[in-house]
Amino acid sequence: MILPSCVYEPTRSLSGLILKNNVKSNYETFPDQVKEFIKSECLEAIGDPSPLIRATIGILVTTIAAKGDLTNWPQLLPTLCQLLDSEDYNVCEGAFGALQKICEDSAEQLDSDALNRPLIILIPKFLQFFRHASPKIRSVEMFLNFTSIQEFCMEKGKPKLLYMYQNVIDVIR
Image 1 (cartoon, rainbow, N blue to C red):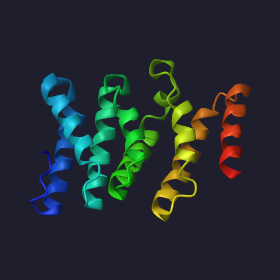
Image 2: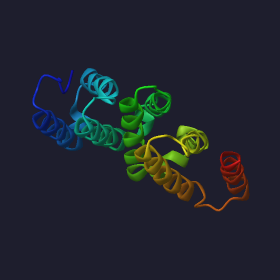
Image 3: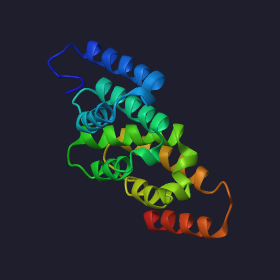
Image 4: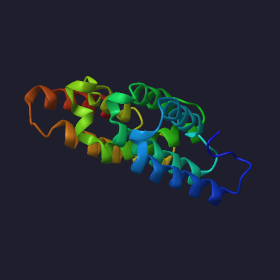
């Protein structure tokens, strides 16, 4: 485990931030096995009981995604979407936090042909949480939808707008 739970929480967070800085500076030089290990451990820790550690993992995940390009981590978005459906609040909130950071840092990639336009899947997924019991998840969901819909509609293509409006109407009903 990258950030073992037996270690003092601020120490774990600092370790994660140091790893993030190493990823930011040296990711290209990491052996593939190290890259895969870090990715795997991040996804495993995304639902950590500590909000501080979940936030740190989200920062690390988005740094890896931005540095290594989302096309080099094809299972990331599908896995995070799957984790949104978890019954465990920590897992759901951790996945939302990571997706929020990815939407902020890699927005242009989310509507790219190279990734098969994941926003087409993400926006309806986010809209499912419009009435979530948790105010925090609802606020992140609203932010994600605003950010995603803004990116999605940048080209102002009518098919995109019609698709987006249909999803919004379906949620409001």
